[in-house]
Length: 462
Ligand code: SF4
Ligand code: SF4
Image 1: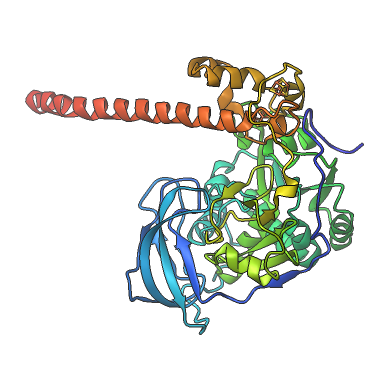
Image 2: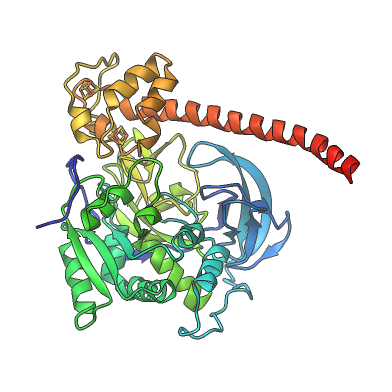
């Protein structure tokens, strides 16, 4: 029986580039490296205008808290450090580097000096952090923090190769063309976590990749290739955990709490590159597709390359674009211009014309059909959440677990009334999180205000 989960949807897969081998795109004349490409605090620049930088050099780093550094993806000269709107729509500092095309590698990019046998989890966490590796499936959570969360707590190390979003085929191509990077990365992680077996979770629509993985692992027992039903959002961590282990991860809980650690296939390959070659994350695979793109392709792209250059490399546009999306059509971020840089989380650049627009209603109104409830993989009631959000009842939204929404979009996909469900939920979540941040800041402020009083008292007593 194929593994799966409850709820979800079956959108057209549109894996048009499944047979397109990854092409290495030549590095651009300029790269634009945003100082925040991960969940957590933004980096502060470690270089200034006019500095000469080498490929792989750390050029920005976080000062503390969650986050990881950013690196120069080409060698060259820092042209400027400017604030620009990022692919996710927020204004953020970015370092512009003019490429000198010398491909001069940073002295910090060097293979690890330790043997495989003496490698520890702490070593891999440190290397992963310094290499700036984040979840490359699009979540962009710093990978070192994820590894650290699993220390001593996991029995299931799972590589996520579901790639359930329509159009995107980068994991599929990675497994077909460079399976060793993933399998060797898995071996390193198994070793440092003290596990003997890992799991590769893959949807049944990638038959050639499944065959390749089985060929590569014949006669070994360090990996189980787990074939899952093709269904969206099978790639969500909670759905994979349920499909493979039967355990349910409820809202607010993390995979390590049920003994699981899940990493995207490209993330594992990046960890392998960092551990074995010392190579930081400066390049990634990107699917370029959509009915406007002349020659859809899979590309290997330097971080910081503007997305319009990816499109030009694919022959340009054949029609007027209606929507440009960085990421998949379900969870990606619509762009308002074509100059946003490729970042660590950019798994795809999709360009669609108006012909692909299916939703036309300007005055959506819920008809209480309940489809959204049936499709929600998190067992939420999206119709109620929308009603509460529209009425400004944020407490009710919280009570109905709006923060458990993973923003997969299944509810919106099949709504016959065109209700902008996920958009409304996302906006309400934003307001709730803002409220929570403000409450936390107020609490911290009052704690700081109370501190001198205590210190004074302590001083007098002594
Ligand atoms: S699918 Fe749309 S119309 Fe049906 S209950 Fe949900 S919001 Fe209402
Ligand atoms: S409510 Fe959230 S988790 Fe549920 S289907 Fe909609 S977007 Fe997905």
